[in-house]
Image 1 (cartoon, rainbow, N blue to C red):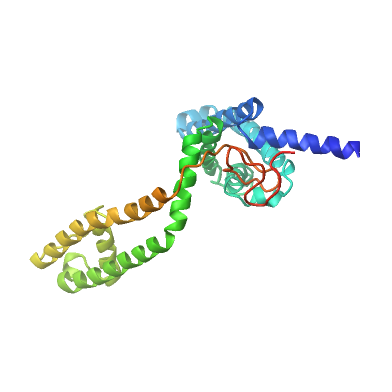
Image 2: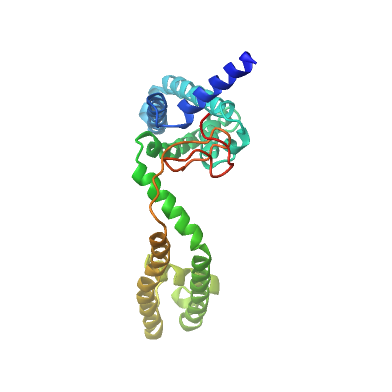
Length: 274
């Protein structure tokens, strides 16, 4: 019984250090982790510079292996310290942690995969937890809720835009023809998308007056269309009341984004702290 209690306390302490940034130990752990990530990315960048990569090839390789092993141990500890490991393994951060660790091992088998270690830059997203930017954490939660609430309307809007691009692209194919670069309907639709989004690569351009008139109309329409998704999401954000969130992570399912006064996990229902 005492052994099980000791093991439970050990896992609880480990979980608090690794997953949360509200305690000094947890913040220190994440700061060290971020420094290691930045150093690792810097090593990959330096190795890509031929003079440096050739002169310090061995030293850079050893340093990268040391960091990779540390990240591997960290990944294992994250799995061990949570009651439901699969929740972390298949979570957003879990997949990033895995993808940022595996390239170095793959480089032993496949040539050219070592540069994928730069994926570790994605792990810098943890800086929001480390600095405890509650305002940004809260705003990101509001934005996610707004995007989920408005996904149906945005989907309809994008479908409508796609239809417009297909219709206008087909018109331009008929009006301009292959001699002006509109060699097929798909290529013409590509031009319509590029023009509607006001990117304008310039690789295809209408030459006839009618085609130029349609292009001008598409460009003006593009500015109006850009504002629509913003309005949809903004209206949903305004409906959400402000909620105080922290970096507290559920020890059972690793779900984050709980209210400051939360006692139970909103995802699995288990108690956040014993």
